[in-house]
Image (cartoon, rainbow, N blue to C red; front, side, top):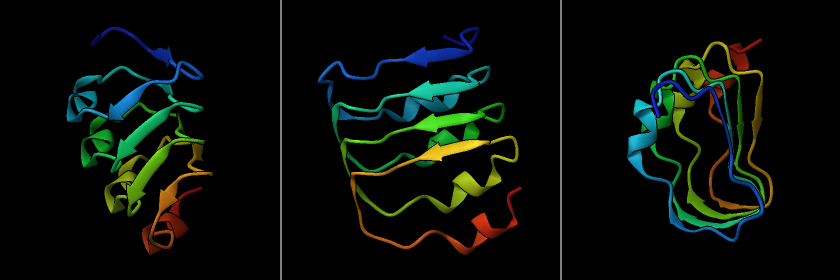
Length: 98
């Protein structure tokens, strides 16, 4: 999966957690997992996908806080997390993203 740049698995009724192994998908630019039943937290390892431009995790059952480490993704243009069960506020570090 290291050569893949776009992955869309939206609307497939996927369950379980997002695996920390996604951090190894170094060339990924777009990751769309919306409209599933994914649970657990957003793994910190997502921040290792340095080329990530779009992360779409809407309409799942994700919980916990938004990882501060996502603010390190300087190329991130779209972060969509609506309709989950996230508990925290948006990390202050996101204020520096443009």
